[in-house]
Length: 359
Image 1 (cartoon, rainbow, N blue to C red):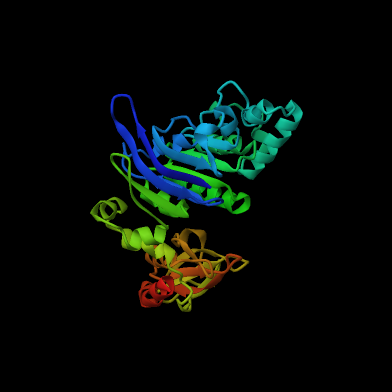
Image 2: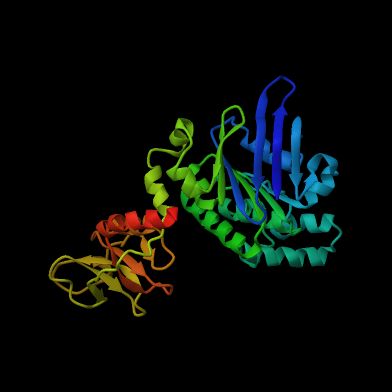
């Protein structure tokens, strides 16, 4: 657990970067700091490992005041991931990851073995172990940065806008990978971002900071989206917060409808649309009414899929709206087609989902 008690950071020129911060980041959860530039979120993060020292107040990590700890000893229990990974350019990937274990006294062979294990953990092929950072894509470099931060198995992980320098597709992949890792490792993570979508996707709790380093609101993402405390938070979260909030409402009450289904080589439908299945019952896309057989040339992309049993109202609505037919494709845990969802069905299920959420 990380606890800020009245923590303030005032720089020599009189600038107050963080002002009387009270906040608890719970053990084994992801806490996200979000806010506009100059709001003190990165300064708050760096005070945890004493890269910046508090001017006033008390900051504890697992019950110990950080100012009473030796900085080097403190940092050995805290992993740190930054933008663009911060890798050593003249060391191989395996040696970049093995740096911390070797500094802690582990032999080179054992440290490299651990590094290769971590490459697999973060989704990197171990065949890349002998490459150098410049030979990797931006997303791969960020995975190396995460692996290096995990190398000493720290209980606490600090992440300072780690995914902001990569393109949106890679960024989403890295976010999903972080959530997968967290489900397995259960670290105490403090994550800084300026992106509210990233914050509500990753955070168990989200802290919104104002300019001047004051905490505006600290809540679970669903609460933040549905009940912002004031106009500043409302504006920062954005006008489409109602749509984002659907991501925190369960879609269990949505009834699944029928779908017209065909396979490759079947006749095209006489009217409307049909979903094309592969040999295992998984969707390949859609075909519209026409003459002749279903071929690769007649199949159009099907939009997003709605996973039954693990989905949200937002996922169901997105599947319906992104489909060319207006019917979202619902799939089971194996990815096989289970039925359809429509925007009307999502809206009809909304009142019950809100009642369940409030209960």
